[in-house]
Image (cartoon, rainbow, N blue to C red; front, side, top):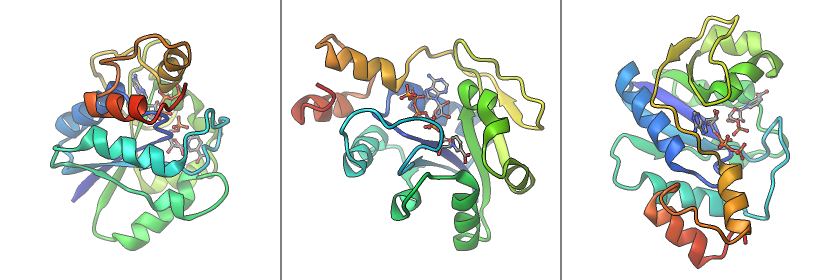
Length: 187
Ligand SMILES: Nc1ncnc2c1ncn2[C@@H]1O[C@H](COP(=O)(O)OP(=O)(O)OP(=O)(O)O)[C@@H](O)[C@H]1O
Ligand SMILES: O=C(O)c1ccc[n+]([C@@H]2O[C@H](COP(=O)([O-])O)[C@@H](O)[C@H]2O)c1
């Protein structure tokens, strides 16, 4: 099977993530998209007190009902920064017959040269880069670039809106909205 991994912090998951996943699944002809939350993001500080199980619960709400979307929690099983080269080694060992791609937005395309063991990653998986407002989708590496409808939504914007008690309705799927409101996350 052809699997697209959408790795992220998902703090919280938003409609940008879903649009990226669905556009890439369709355009690249992938069988499944696995939403893979990291334990500790390698390049940024985890803001908010939201726990990993709460992030997983939000992802499950976000993808419920889509038969080609799954959540993959392998990075939550180890401590320290979630370096992708380690994760992909584990996933390839566990699923030797799957063909993995790793999906990234423009911010991560720009950051790619700083990823740990980037040469190993480039030689073992395909990176699929998608455009994201304010970032370039150009890379000196051989990655696949796909064009999607531009979505100017980020988790940090949603956290800020929630903190300021402003509306973020419709920026996240309805079930995620209800969960955030019900558990008073990010307030
Ligand atoms: N609106 C978007 N357009 C394109 N790619 C996106 C968008 N939002 C997130 N992504 C991509 O999805 C992946 C996971 O993103 P992440 O969970 O860190 O969300 P984020 O919105 O970037 O979070 P934060 O604002 O907290 O940094 C990354 O590769 C990121 O580039
Ligand atoms: O392995 C690395 O060096 C590395 C550096 C930056 C980001 N990543 C991964 O890229 C994905 C998107 O990152 P983030 O933090 O924007 O959600 C997520 O799966 C991260 O673990 C990985």
